[in-house]
Length: 463
Image 1 (spheres, rainbow, N blue to C red):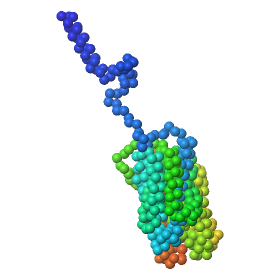
Image 2 (cartoon, rainbow, N blue to C red; image 1 turned 135 degrees about the vertical axis):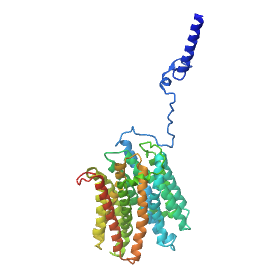
Image 3 (cartoon, rainbow, N blue to C red; image 1 turned 60 degrees about the vertical axis):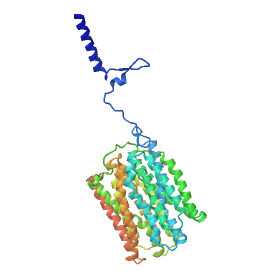
Image 4 (cartoon, one colour; image 1 turned 90 degrees about the vertical axis):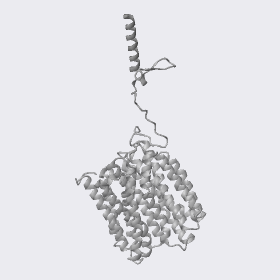
């Protein structure tokens, strides 16, 4: 009986041991006969983390900041803006041809809607573009934008019988693709730099000025020699080729975690964002008036030739390119917000002091140089300031929200400037238009100064 009891107890203990260690005991590999230690240490309820799929952002935080890959991102962004914003800046060449040859019976105000929508819709689409940059691989987003831009221009080359078709293709569809290129190009470089962030972003946004410098004469040459359709097709093919290569390097440094809110508008509760938003509206409202009105002012009021007016635009684009790069270096020592507020103030003074009181070719050249240098700094430093204040992980969506301000300013500024010239200045008195632009740029500088003292109240502090 003792032997039977011992056997029963032993069997019970063995069964208990099996039950307790079924899930925790080391498993034995059927091929090698060895215990699998990794499975032994793994919790029972552990869920394996899924690897990011190929279209999702992957974390690259192990790559060094301010390194070679960061500069590859900068160069790629510069080329991408060269053809997206460069095409927007060079639309005036197409508008001239449409007005004189292709659609002579259409009013200029109708033709100008193509260029206005290019910049306006590009900024309006900034929010969905920023969301896509967070949810998907930014290389895929920027590549898709290049495809849309190229296809839009190629389709536009066959729309030579109605201006509304060009408004849809060359205006709206092109600008949607440009937004998918513009948002990654201006937001991703900030993630790869700390010490030279302002310089890096300045080089990227300088691409738009560089594109305007050479795309304008190149487009004119293609139209003269090959015609508008082939000019659009060739530009579209070049955009596809260049953007495809550049988008390979446009990688986000962080894998952003998904969240319940698609767009987080809580940032508007931060007084600093509200000040930047209002400053951007005022600055963009004033920004295009010198670009649109200086050439006609030189011809109608000063009595200069059309070539002189064209050269003024070339001076502004060249100075703007230098300004976007140069202010990035200045901001390292002076502070990003300090530099942005100063650039906006000097831009306003160039309009009100150099353009408003004088009617001579020399002062127009001086105004073009000063305005180009400092308005470029204002445009280039906005993304840098956003990264400094709110970090770089969600910078794509925050910049997308900010560019809604640019959309409002664009849709208000250009039409209002033309209406003031026609209705108040009777088409020849530019002073009300100049005052309109100068005052709005001055208001932008006041908003940015308020931002500076809201961020740090010490006068001599580098902010």
